[in-house]
Amino acid sequence: MQDQTSPQLEKKQLSNPLANYFRQPKIYIRLPSHGRFYAEGALDKSAIDEYPVYAMTAKDELMFKTPDALMNGQATVEVIKSCIPAIKEPWNMPSIDLDAVLIAIRIATYGEEMEVTASCPSCSHINDYVINLVTFLGTLTSTVYESKIQVGELVINIRPYSYREVSKTALKSLEQQKIFNIVNDDSISDEDKITRFGESFVKLTELTVDVIAGCIESIETPDGTVSDSQMIHEFIGNAPSDVFNTVNDHVTNIKEKMSLKASDVVCSECDHKWSVEITMDQSNFFAVKSRT
Image (cartoon, one colour):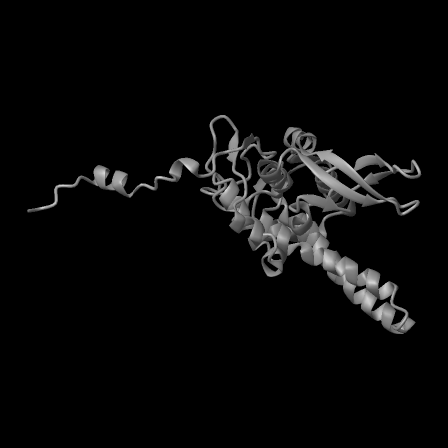
């Protein structure tokens, strides 16, 4: 006798009886980008501009304890996919969403408050503080990304880097650190210092130009709009310094506006006041207690 089981009945029979106990969204987040700057298909856009955030699974937490995965950004990508499934391709996520997304995931997993342990710079006393992450999240999601710059006759349209591009620009930080190490290395002769400093400075300059050119989406001129990336890169390399500096300052200011702000604290031992930086280093930030 032929099996007459319908696909619907078969699906029901195979459904997991534990499905009702799977993760449910803990909070909803408005992205600082408001869904702008995502490549086609990278974000399942919401009509109400809100996206569900799930708590991390045990697998997600283990991802943030894997050094190699943290170094290349893969751990961050996998955890974002798991906890905010609307973001289909986190590598293509605009960088202005990154901090807000990671804070939202931490809130969904561990709650709104984060304990921070900080050593007083005056007396070295170890202090414990409680930071409310909702305040940070609200600041990030309410900041407007200004994407147009007027420079004389030109209107320069900029965009935030994608998370993949941010990972690549980490080279700039390495070159900066290299310069610092060279200057402070007493084992290197002054002559070698000058040579190595010069080589690293040239690399850093080239990287800075690449970073600025890479965040320009198009340039509007009286004769039309240029969006070819090679032409834009050539322009930035040959533009007057005031044009470059205007774009560079604008990009830097936006980065500062859309970054986590330090929290003012007071030492319980000596009453010294200072600011505690909240860093997004995943191995630290996603521990239940953060140290700084």
